[in-house]
Length: 310
Length: 264
Image 1: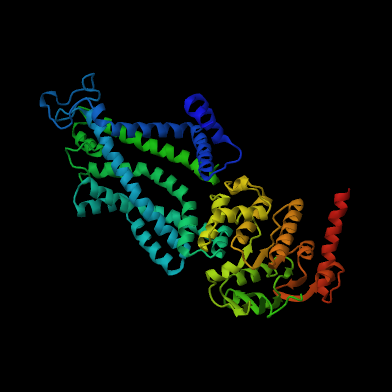
Image 2: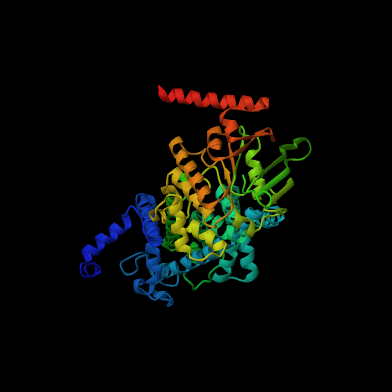
């Protein structure tokens, strides 16, 4: 049987299909794979989510293969060719120093994705841990943690990020820290609210009566229930993270000028808006498209992950 | 009843549970007193809101602020329950749709109990317990939403049994199930008790259910255990208290009424 599988690819494909659609899963791996397949099919039936996903996948591919996609060197100035209109030589024209905007945009996608991923990696676990702990343990732990969250929430996020970026000095890493500081409190709030409903459920009472410790209940029973809504929330937040990063870059507190960060590009293009629209319009549209893609994907994820919405 | 050696397995006296303070203070359970010998089944019956589930939750440690004494196998239980207690006393919840974690496969649910109590031969124990509750190994890798109500309750019973407890607290284990499935689960519970010499404390509002499982029954009303009857007394409607008489009468009429409807 296994020989046939290796010699006949068509046959092995159809048996993979059988394995994925078997009515009775015989291993944990198979059950998980089947669950994943069902979610995947559900996502594929949602047009706008697929659009978002395609744009994000393209963005990731562009970032990965930036050196092969870029047509010009983004570091060298070419003052003879400054402020060129979009043409076949320069797809999106050139900027005030004669650098190719398309190439800069391609490399800028790396910075955008870097900021977005790093912020998600920092903010989501912090928000999740703080929120679930506060919600599950309750009492003074809850009060103390949630007041801290309230304080962070009381600041407008851009202003908070701005003040941190100003205090720590401009730069991408500091921008990431600043944005993360503004991004975790809403996630903590969300996780706490979810936890409050989960805490009083029978299955949590049941696992407590099995003798599980508080840590085990939170880590293995409460957190898995909160993860979908946190993933949805952080995906929907991605757009505002991109915008905040771009805003910091625009104000000169994020990535610094030679770096092709989209917000910084937009900022330097602002002076030439009247005469050379493409300097500001191209990075602006890139920010718009990336934010939109994350929003659409977030909506799609909500449809498949959150049972209350579907 | 003759295997009552070394005192009762579960001995509850003067158990009171009070919720709220000041004007909102309500005593949900008032000085409840009963005992169960090892291997016996005791039922608490009464209309909804009479405090019978509260007794169960207080004994299990889900409601920490109760008064009175609970002596389990000769040892008074006070404060928070520890792991050793849960190893010996397990609970089955009313609603099998709510008591299983929606994102955990049957296998994981059962394996976790074993992990908590550091038990060996996990694969084997899981197969055995699933067979004992009448589910095949096919069910190991199912999620709760892929199971029917009866199957879920079987999984919940398997979860309680897998760590080999001595006492099962049953909180209306069949009331969320439809009638034909109810009978299956009740027969399962009866068989399991005989095979494993389990002690049952069962709560229900359904006379037939309690009479089927339990040797002795406490009738509750407004937080008070009015009187204790044997299963035979129940079947013959021999009650002294006037509320109990009414309750039994109403239950019998309801059963008769349903029976008539079924016949038509």
